[in-house]
Image (cartoon, rainbow, N blue to C red; front, side, top):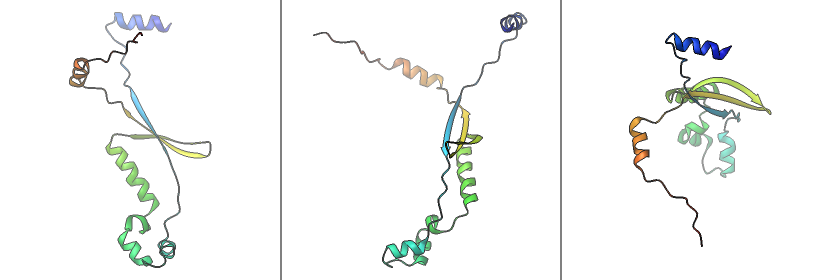
Length: 126
């Protein structure tokens, strides 16, 4: 029946729409406790105070809001055209699944590929 429908659409001048290829990215979400500058100061033998560590390394010891980190991460992926399509837990691992339209090579890139010499992988006989 599907073949008859396709044939009928072709006769009517309509074509089946071409499906756009996708590429996918899977990211594992990892939850870590915030870095403790007091603990780091103790491990350094007090060479740097907790306050100095917070001031010198704010991205690590600044107590950044976890939600803000996730938002920033998602926005960076969005700038590269990745769309979050699903969150899923598989084997106890929380995963985020993203997709975006696959980047097809341009006509110039295809022409360059055709003009490059092909490697000959013929077997040599002794």
